[in-house]
Amino acid sequence: MVTVNQQRVLRKRTYLMCSPERFAVEYAINPWMDVATPVDAELAVRQWDGLRRTLVDLGHEVHLLTPEPGLPDMVFAANGAFMVDGTVYGARYKHEQRAAEAGLHRAFYEAHGWRFIAPGETNEGEGDFAYLPEAHGGLILAGHGFRTELPAHAEAQEALGRPVVSLHLVDPRFYHLDVALASIDDGNVAYYPGAFSAASQQVLAQLFPDAVLADDADALAFGLNLVSDGANVVLNGAATRLAGRLKAAGYTPVPVELSELKKGGGSVKCCVAELRL
Ligand code: ARG
Image (cartoon, rainbow, N blue to C red; front, top):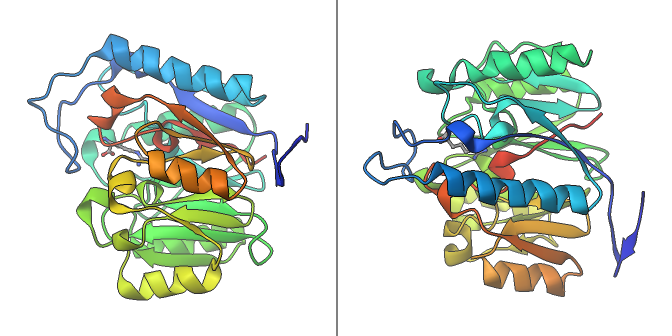
């Protein structure tokens, strides 16, 4: 299904999500997590389900993973793998608390018969990898500095056969690429320059002269942790100026509320892995 929305074109997507039924903040592995702040898991499920319904109502297919006891961060399904052209490059989590999630994602992909490549290097899937099918014929952007390690970028390039551009994250609040940068369509991105080293900012400016830039407040509101289908941009409702900039660029912002999951250090994109079949 292709519909034209102003000048922007929606491409139907296939996503993978995992309900936050077992979501909790039991450990702190990023600066947003505070084990002393209570989490309302019921509210988290309601907010997450609002996101799931939003994506379904926009015409997209959403697969579900079953949440497992003892894995309170499983709701952040984007970290479990990175799929391009039907090939899946598996994740290998940095922190031991999340390590077991990788096998559950692997089992999901293998059950569907998709080609799965097991990683040798530490990487957190779509948390640190983004794919732009129409930038330079198909470009992977990859973050390093906090979670995914640099050798994983080369491993992903070999696994997926697409050029990988390494970007250095330098601010611990933006510990994954997907909290600092998002693809907004097949060839363009939105990002927060301050999350990147000066050299990586220069690389991004060269590759994406028409990028939509977020300010500090919208980036800290997790505005960039968004999911776009090329026309509709589903993003955290608190990022109001970014929503305005996306609208001015011809996209339709679709705000959602995910306050509970922010306590785990994530928002829209963290909850949604894209299956690029
Ligand atoms: N608590 C999780 C962690 O620190 C949050 C993961 C957020 N996911 C993301 N794709 N940025 O690993």
